[in-house]
Amino acid sequence: KFPAAQPEVADWSEGVQVPSVPVQRFPAAQATEWVGTATERS
Image (cartoon, rainbow, N blue to C red; front, side, top):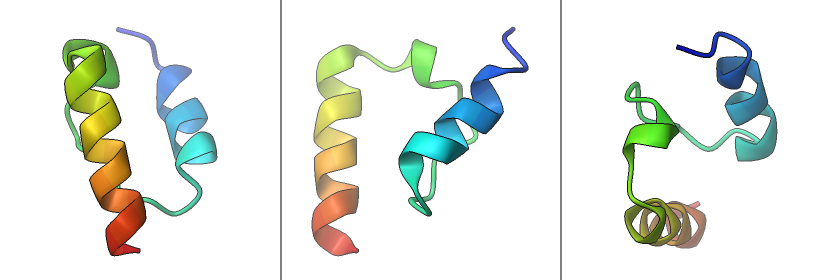
């Protein structure tokens, strides 16, 4: 429950669509793989 995390995520994402689910709930490996996939697709 970190309201401040939302704007921060939007900031580092730089336009990348972030899942509605908090990033903290995603495993580090899963998050890294997802970010890599999103970067390749953009």
